[in-house]
Every structure is written in C-alpha cells, then in structure tokens.
Image (cartoon, rainbow, N blue to C red):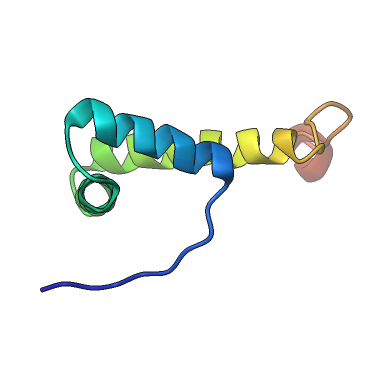
Length: 84
C-alpha cells in the first residue's frame, strides 16, 4: 500500500534526512518510510523502546524550543510548579 503525505519540515531537518538517505543509498521517500516505521515499532514495542522513544521526542522538542529562542533558563522546574 502506498500513502502520500504532505508535511512541513524544518529545512535543516530535511537537509539532514537527505544526507542520511544518501549515506544509506536510498531515496528520501524510502528513508522517511523507514524512519516512520521505526518510530511506529518503537511506540508499540517494549516498555524500554517506548521510554527511549519518549526521551528522543522530548529531546527534539527541547532543541526546537531552544532554537526558537525560548531557552530553559529562567523557566520553572517541578519544585516551582508542584511545590515539592
């Protein structure tokens, strides 16, 4: 089955993905298919795979947050929020 997707991705991410695809000797569509499949398997795999996936997604979100000029410095931590 073939599914066609349209997504907006950061130019730096696209460049990185193209480089990975080239190093793997596959086209970008094939590489993206492999990445999505690997993510799906991790999301529905063992507890350890799910934890590793969550950590990777969190790291990506923090990097995007910082890149967008919203650094963690001066932010609240759990103790500030929950009073512990």
